[in-house]
Structure formats: C-alpha cells, structure tokens
Amino acid sequence: MQVLVDQIEKAARETDFSGVISIYQAESPLYEQSFGFRDIQNRLPNLPGTRFGIASGTKFFTALGIGRLINEGLLQLETQVGELSPDYVGFINPRATIRHLLTHTSGIYDYYDEETEQDFDRFFVSIPWYRLETPTDYWPLFQGQTPKFQMGERYSYSNGGYIFLGMLIEKITGQIFRDFMQEQIFQIAHMPQTGFYALNNLPANTALGYLEDRETTNIYNLPIRGGGDGGLFTTAEDLRSFWQHLFANRILSPELTAIFLQTHYQFDDKTGYGCGVYKRLDGSLFAIVGGDAGVGFDSRYLVNQQIIISILSNITNGEEELRKVVMDFFCPKA
Image (cartoon, rainbow, N blue to C red):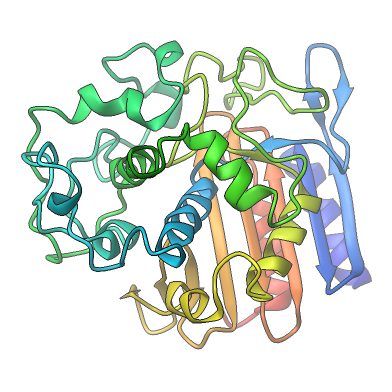
C-alpha cells in the first residue's frame, strides 16, 4: 500500500487536488486523506467528513428510488410511461418503459444532451437556475419537444431521462423528490450527511464547488437544488455505508438488486451499464461517477476484494488523475 500512498500523494501535489480520497477494505481503512480547501477564499480546509456534490453520481440513487416503488408494487420495470399519464407524449414515445429510462435507451428528449453539450462550466437552460428546486420544476423544458430517437434503438446518456424519473417519483408518491429520497434511500442506507441541499443554504462542512479557474464558485452554473440527474451532496463515509447496504440487499430486495446490477447495456468487451450504475461485465466492479461545474466524483466497489474507493473533488473534473492512479494499482489490466 505504501507504493499506492506515495503515488496518490504525488498526483495530488502535481494536480493541486482539492477533495477527499477514501479507500476501505470491508471495515478496515487502507487510506483516507483530505486535500485543499472547501472554501478557498477563506482558507477553510477540506476534511475527511466534508460533504461534496457528486453530480451524475446521483443517478444511481434515483434509480434505487424507482426500485423502491417497484418493490412496493407501484411500478414495474416494463411499465410504459403512457400508462402513467396521458401527458407523457411528444417528448418521449409513450411505449417507452421504466427499464428504458433507467438504462438510457428510452430516446427521451434530453434538456442537457452531453453528446452535443460538453462545456459544464458554460451550460444554461431557459429556466433560471434558482427556480429549479425539484424535478417537476423542469416540466416546461420537456413540453413541445420531440424524442431524440426511438426507444430501444441505442444507448444515449440522458440527463433528461433521470429528471423524468424524478418527476415520476413525485407523481406516484405525492412527495417532493428530496423528501422521498431521504426517507426511502438515505435513511435506510445510514447516510446521515447526504441530501439535496440548496446551493445558497449549504450546511456546515460542505465544500463550495469551484470552476477550473479555482476562483469562481458554481452557484450560478447549476440548479439551486439537485434533482433526479444530479446535485446530491454526500461524504466518503456515507458512500461506504451505501455500498455496504446495497450489497447486503437492505435497499432493494435481493431479486431486484440482482436485476439492477445486471448488464443491461454493453459498452465493450469489459464494461457495461446496469440500472443507473457502471459495471464490469463479470460483476467484479461497480461504479458511480459524476462531473459538472465545480464537481469531480468517482466511487467504486471492488466486489471480490470488498474494497470501496471514493474520490470526491470540489473542482471541475478534479478527480481524474487520482482515479487513474488508484485504478492502475487495483486493476492494472483494466
């Protein structure tokens, strides 16, 4: 491990890494360290327990929220969106299913299409960010739009699809998305430091997100509060608890957990996608990742070794170099 520690700390120095890296094997810490500042101007350091935004790492949690509804018999993977409301037409084929949405194969209109929009730091929508507090607030962005492609035709990473899944959670439960997720996911997974916090009212020990200039915060670059596709805040410790509870079948039933972790789409001869989660085809590794203005995030579970690796950064794409170092050590042939 000392070789890895030296490599991590060298990469952290060379890239001026700001964030936390945590590596545990079961209950035993292998390495955990914080770097940089959660508030650069006031020189407030990041700590191992600092909360960070995780951007699209949120999607797997949204998927599990849908899974809770499936376990309760309120939905099925093959439920068609047209069965849920006659309003769900135009922007998506009403015959598209929940499974299509979870696996980015629905063809739904995407308000933030990453196949065409690559610049996190300069992306905006027609609704002011301060008005986007919950998934249903995005509804005007979908009205009058057309599908990107026909359901099942191909894979296309879809932020719009996961915002829509958040809308469905609100419609079916009658709850605000963040309240449902708190009760049905974060409490069950023992994640007390995790939540959809407003950017203008962050709790103590939460890292401000910085653009690549490391001077400008992301408060005007993102929705004021996260939704189904991103914007969750969490800690390395909460992520460790999450992976443990997931694989102990405490969030979903054993049968549905297995289905969510199956390969639903194959990228190449080694990697694929389940329901909201990236994976190795052989089931040896699962990962959730996120990158956005002021966010760089990667959390992985190596199944055979019971190793949990989480890298959380409050700089745009700030996790990339450390991820390379860690994965080259644990999975040198990956």
